Length: 475
Image (cartoon, rainbow, N blue to C red; front, top):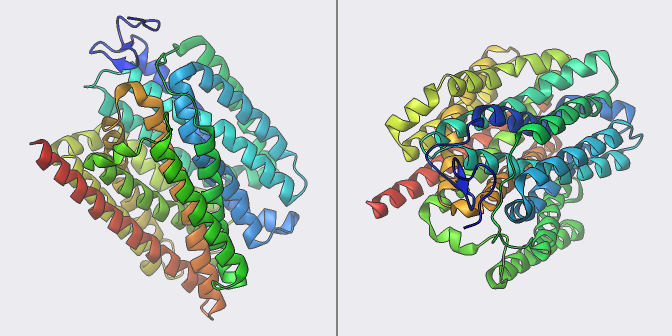
């Protein structure tokens, strides 16, 4: 039996042992730092929309592609990156990802046109894909099964911190520097993370891991990009225009080819047999819909705070902070883990998503010219995230064989990135259509928030139902 370093105490062929790695909590802090850098860039650009519109003369479609280029490249490459991490080493992928992300941030910060910024964001997505797959995979390897839920809770809290902290950090930077600085601040953090990973993170891999599925990665990236492009183009070009219908047809054909390839490939990056497990299917359905609603809603919220309520970038970022602070408080204190243990995974996911949907409705319906409705909504969303997200991630990873931890993390990350990109595109399209039909900007933003609430609520009940069914089958 071939083992990685410290295998007698924490992992053999990628499978955790009861003891766990002796430095597991310190290592978790290191990988969360690397992950936080990537996640911040999912939302940091939102508060820079007015600056980019003014200084680069960016249109709405340009802004959406600046956001989506980053997330769509990640979503297309995450499965391949996870498979490569399992085979070649998760530490190597962490190091490579941090280096690529730092270089991409430098190019983005110095871009002088929308085209160059979009290209740089796509390049950053490659490094981000390598990082996001390895952080969760490493966490699953270095902790014992008993400690994994707590570790995933902290990992999920960092997700929320990055998700909601982007507007805050972006607002602070934009109040003192030009827009390019929101990317340049990544460089010292990436450098610090690189040093820490080299010094602390042990190497782990599955020597029998599958080879990266490059055709699958290409097909999934092209298919998802085509789908989002069609959605973005709909409001301005017409949903029945040749441009939109042609791009949508490409998306359907390419994604169909992706499914066909994965079902016949000897070493697919996405084993379609995973979908036979109700736990996996339920968690997948819920994850896509929750991130769809949350990603698009946060995109609309930052515009609501600046364009409707008149806050500056920094104040707008500060006023979104209660969401992240609620998630961090509930996960780091262990309260959400205790609630989840008592309620069970299905009820935890359903309850969490009901809270999040209620928060989105509060923002849409109670915030008539003031901040009170938004504050209540952010607190509800934060509480829901703290309960539902760790349960969702653990359900996905538990349905994947331990030696496929990288692939499992890739699936989890793909769902998050794709759902976020699609949410921005769809709810952005809802906003554009609402304004074009004569609604005010405020009314259009509210309509988009309500669409996001419905998606989150549906996701909660679908996921909970399928997970409950899986528990009954197991019993």
